[in-house]
Image 1 (cartoon, rainbow, N blue to C red):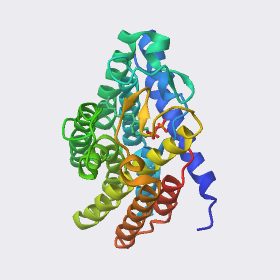
Image 2: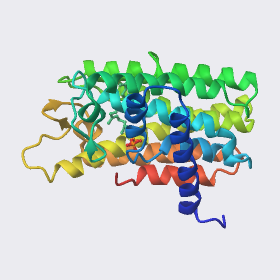
Image 3: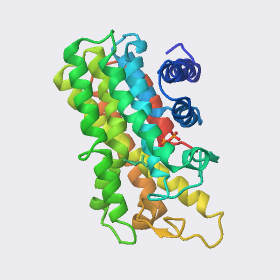
Length: 294
Ligand code: GRG
């Protein structure tokens, strides 16, 4: 491909950022709430979920901007999950992406409400998108609700909380990651394909791709944690703030986790190859996810 991929993604990242902030600023809502919502949206996330969505549209030779509203909705819902995950009643984190967490700056009540606002507003953005037909809107809203809700990310988060201080099997660990992390990534891939006009068979292949990608994402996150933790004397492997958590390196050793990472990366690419679409951008993102350093 002749375009510089990094520049290409930076271009869409910037457009996404502009759209996200504009969408909040135009709301006739309390300034404090909008400030809290914008604070976490502007906190320097990698935007991997929207980029997957844009890359899937690109695979069909269509304009990625067709998916802008849905991409904003997805990033808003991801951001809500991070705000709530950091709360004292959940992970009780003071820092996220190197900056004070939302509740540290705005207080717990506003942080909860900023998360609620991002979650609900995301769905409104899709419903109001004039570029989409009604059938696609219902399809997207239904899948996003499912993947973010009790049989998706929320269910995965509950399973993760209940797994604390327990030794899990690989199957149990996969359930958590498949739901807590994988379902929103998967929505990005499938939403882009659907918006671009993918048929049912292609959607199945993109789903298979995204499932392996989700696990690869999480395994590489776990590996990064270990590599970082080795520098922190006295911090047990697979633990965050003293809570014992099962991770791939803890269950499989670092070598075993790296093997699993290669396996899921290869399987993800194999599913992509079967789609017969121009999946070079999705390939690139898969490699970025497998080799990421943050
Ligand atoms: C509160 C319902 C609810 C769910 C929270 C996503 C999540 C579920 C918790 C975050 C904690 C965590 C470390 C999850 C593993 C998945 C993960 C690495 C999420 C962070 O996603 P990135 O790396 O974040 O895409 P950025 O900062 O780049 O946006």
